[in-house]
Length: 461
Image (cartoon, rainbow, N blue to C red; front, side, top):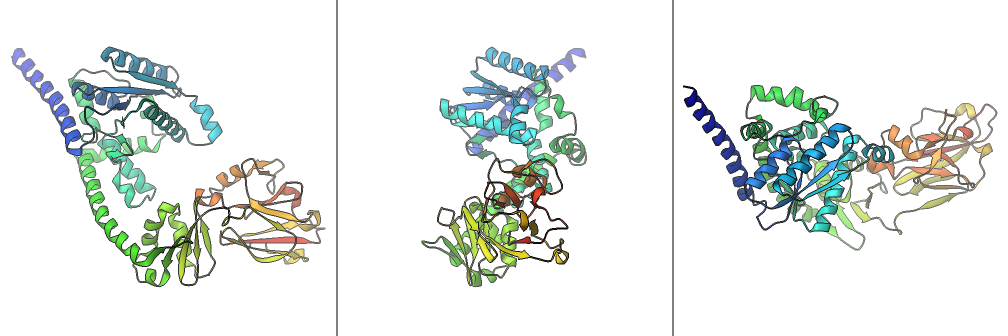
């Protein structure tokens, strides 16, 4: 009886191992991901997923190299991952590229989240390796569990229809050959093949959104619907198909109401008014210019001729019967304006300012949105209006110390698309006396004895 059970157990292991390998090879062929002639670089962390991909590539006879990043975030555990990966590659004679990052130092410098910092470091290095050594594709070990979690994260972030795509199988020479299978199947395969891998202790906690979704949403969901990962993957592929059809129709409609000229791209507002869901339609066609959904929405809500919104590369201008999209260049963007005295409706890169003097402090309404007040008795004219620059700082109203403009905008959660538009007012000595429309310099605030007030009203930001 024991012999019979042993034989049966061996058959089960054999079936599991070969089913995974067969599924892997079929997925590569049906998706036309790569061939044995391609130069492949595998992102190898040492975890279950990348180790599984390593062995599947090796068993399928593909020639590849591996790349491992040591981010130094888990001390001896990170070093253990590197040692494991090195031994694995040496055993199978797979070329390995290693790098160590001082991730925390870079994070402090760039002021980004630790995950975002690590991801940027990782993929920048991968791109350098691919260029230097002429690799055709980078392979990552994302599977259908990751795909499901990504869709949920995108939904929580209101990412729109593209968020329903999840993780693409092939994008910009980055290929995910494990998107044919899920987390549980990978673990079963590794166990059946008696393959070792490294466990990342940071995956056990719920500090990161992805981990929390995995532990509290996707795992319970699979208890209800065991093939949830498969169903979400299939649904995402249908969404892509439907979107391809919609794209063809949208492009046809776009050609009917837009045209190219020496000025830029123009959009007929009368024809646009006939379209349902104008904001979504315009956003789809203008997102390539860097405009956000909220910017498009603000533009369409306004009927004022001359209203502008600015992305990093383009200006969107509303005219009487059309919208004009112009690339930013030195002739379009104003670098600085000299302010010698009161002025009304001063246009500065898509924003309008009213600057005037007030002589009655008791009549000041501090609740007016977008209005700042400076003690004109302490100002030496002319002033300079310009965009803030890296290194600019100000002593914010109510504080005794100086603070970087960039930090103030971060604290106020100013959208990236609007950060660069925020102007500052600078005195003759180069000191920033106001960050519009958020704060003034503490030393230029109003006092009971102030007799002359400079009122600055920023509009259309």
